[in-house]
Length: 255
Image 1 (spheres, rainbow, N blue to C red):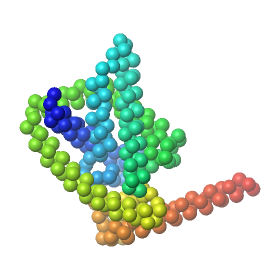
Image 2: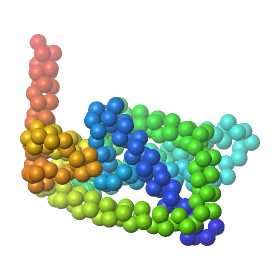
Image 3: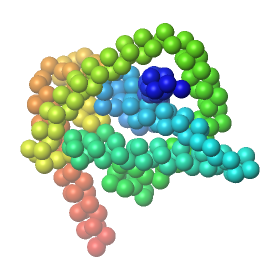
Image 4: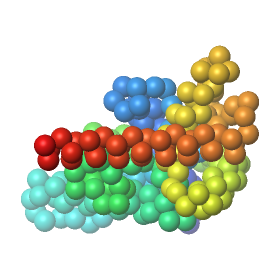
């Protein structure tokens, strides 16, 4: 297979996985996490690169020559490699944003066994479940989609258009994140991206008397600097509140 074909297939799988992951995260936040409709992730558009890399990686893993002579053992090995790979991708992505951008895209710090609040056993288990679902249910459909794409290479134009839109979105989001990073460095904090979105959404609905934009969660009547100051004040008050409750609990236990 030519290098260009491999590149186009990789881009196709990346965007397919990114969109499917975005849909999954939207419904997860609505019904299990924030209980609100929140545009998840770092970018504005309907895609999450973490899942895009994940789908591309899982498909590549299915091409590995694992032949132990036992089909059940082969399946277990494929699923384990996929699950570990997804956890590793999640950890690297989270670490890049926390260390480099002073932004925490997700927070597992309250989960048992978490590492730096970036990964934890529960969500690693979820990745294994997703890997198993992909292996047993999605491998053939995805392979068929790839074969279809290769045989209709004229759709490479569509992939190119989507890539262009993605790069524009990436540039806009990086510019926004650099402003957040500057604020976070000045305050010596790490900004929780989802909480910042929620704070802006709550302020808009409380004071501007309208619903926050789902597609543009950072768009409000106030400047971003003011929104960040409000977020920092809320987080500081939240930390103080937690400290007071802990102090009261410790005092009650001593009595």
